[in-house]
Structures are given as structure tokens and as C-alpha cells.
Length: 288
Ligand code: SF4
Image (cartoon, rainbow, N blue to C red; front, side, top):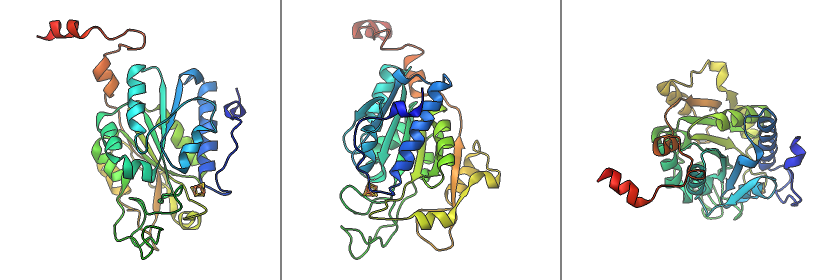
């Protein structure tokens, strides 16, 4: 198979220069490589998206897919994985979508360690609705809903997800496609909840390419140990989504540990799709 097989007939309507193109191209390449390497099966791959510019990725990818409600990508992703643990489940979501509307769903998926991957297209703006501030926009951001500047400090989604219990926490950047592909591949192969915050500039409403271009550096330069939680937190806190002049922005895998997944704990190697759940009566008889 080659990655062109993953193309669809849908006309791409992202703005020229949008960071979403980098995520789509990287995901197609990674899916294609993993399929050819025998690590995942195309028929077992399911992708999901929420609402926002990012969500059109579903239309451009010829694999099993599901559009969720706004911010709710983790919930159907968890359900799909629990119904058939043999599936590879990858959710795409925007920052307004995942960190605004759906933050509790994301936190609980991390807490449970569901074996799903969440890839967040973080342009730090609600772009489909033409430019309102999101939870990761910098303070003072002059969006459509805050013309005189947002009064709120952004939060750091990596710190939040690490604290919630995510077993794989990473950041990547659409301006570095090789880094993005490498990180996506690691995240998909990780057993447990994996999370990538992808810095994805919105060319039309919040063009951050130059800002990131001057500040992004690879964590590998610092010999980072992703099994060390304290070190992960320290590196994650190097950048708190503010727009200070002298800041450096680390990208890479901050945290990566092994822990039993929610599906393993719940199903004990049973696949509900192949072995339907015993009747409730039998379960009650066994436990009461
Ligand atoms: Fe991309 Fe921004 Fe255009 Fe949406 S509005 S397609 S995020 S450049």
C-alpha cells in the first residue's frame, strides 16, 4: 500500500498554508508505514474528530471514521476501543474542542488510561468561527470575542494531562514534519492513553509560524528521560503557553510509562465484539 490509497475524493477546503495540512500528511504517512510494517491493520484503524477546522481531516482520510459531538472525541473513542480492543483508535481534536468544550472528557480518558491516542491540533484559537480565544490563547489575545484582549491566563494542557494520569504526554510542531511523524508513531504504538499537543498555526487568524520557528527545540538535546515524572513536569513547565520574547519551547515525548490500560482491567483479555457480555443475571449470581 502507499499513502495515496488513504486519499479521498473530498475537496480540501483548509486555507493555503494552514498547519492542518502538516498533520494530515504526517498522519497518512504514519498510518501507511504502520500498515506496511504489519503493526496495525487498515481495517482495524478507526479515526475520530470533533468540531472545528481540524475535523475536516476525517473527510480527507480513507479509513473507518466517526464525527463526534463538539469536544466529545474521547468518549466514543473509549467506547469503540472497549467494544473491540483489537481496534487502533486515534482521535483528532482542536484546542477549543478538547480543552474548552470537552476538557472533562479528555481528563477522564487520561485518568482511566484508555488505550487510545488523542492528537490535538492546537492553533490556540477557535478558527472555524473566525477567531475567538481558547484556553491556550495567550493573555491579552485580541480575538473576535475579546477585541480589547483576553483577561485570562492560558493553562498548560500537558501539565494538566500529566497530572490527570496520562501515560504518554508529548508536544510536536507542524513546522517539523519529521518530528511530528516520529511522535505520532510512538503515540499510536503506546499501550495506554497517549496525548500529543501539536502546535498548529492558523495561517488566517493566528499565524504563529515565525513565533514557533524561533523558539522550538527538540527535548532530545537535553537528554530527557521520559520515564522520570519530575523531569517531565520541569520540562513541560518551561513554556506555559504565554508569548514571552525569550521563551524556548521544548517539543518531544515528555512522559512515557507502562501501566495497565482500562480495557485490560475491565475486560481481562475478553473481546466483547467476539465474546458478547454474559447476561447481567449471570454476573449478579456470581457476585451476590
Ligand atoms: Fe487553518 Fe485557520 Fe484556515 Fe482553519 S481558519 S483552515 S485553522 S488557516
